Length: 243
Image (cartoon, rainbow, N blue to C red; front, top):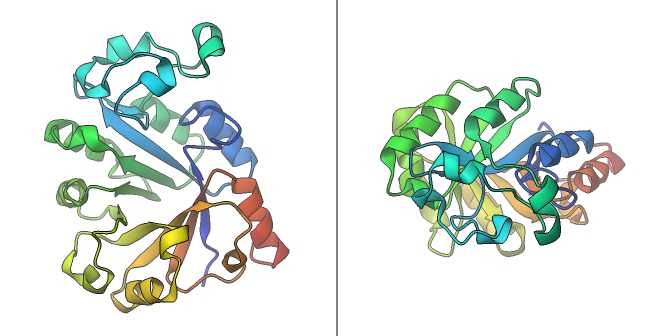
C-alpha cells in the first residue's frame, strides 16, 4: 500500500489565514502532499475560495456570499480585526487558485459548500474548471452536489463527508460516491473502515493532529489525512519509515 497522502486543511490554517495563498504556500513548505480548500459561489455565479456562507467571521461584513457579487466581495479583506484593513488578503476566486496550482501540481481536495445547492449553473461552472485537473477530487456534506458533479464529470473523484445519517453498510447504494471523508474521533473504527473496504470505497480522515498512533500503520481503507498540522503528520509518518 502506498503512503496515505497528507492534505493541509484550508492550507496551513494553524499558521496562516485559511484558504489564502500564504496558507497554501506554507503548507507545501511543511511538506503537505496536497491542499484541502472550500468553494462557495457569488451572486454572479463565480466560484470563490472561502469556507463560510456568511462573511462576518472572516471579513467583518455581515452578508452571504451568495447575495454578493464578485466585485463587492473583492473590496473586502480577510483576517484579524485590527490587521485586515491594512494588509489582509482578498478572497481568492477559483480561477486564481487554479492559476497558482499550475505552478504547484499537487492534489487538491475541493469542498463544495452550501451556496451551490440553489445554483446548479455555478456548480457546473466550477466542475468544468476542475474536471481535467489530475489529482483533484470534490468533497461535500451534500450528496446531491456530488451526484451532480459526477454527472457533469463522470471521471472525477467524489468524496462524501460522513454525518450521523450515513449508513456505512449501504455505501454500495451510492454509486456516485467514490470515497468517504470522516472525523477521526467518531469514525476511525474497525467497523466503519471494514465496511468501506468491503464495498470498494476508501477513506480520508480529518481533524488529524499528528499524535494518532494509527498514522504509522493505517487501515487498508485509508488513503489520506486532512490536517491543520501537515508538518506534524509528515513527521509522524517519517518516524516509522512511512515516507
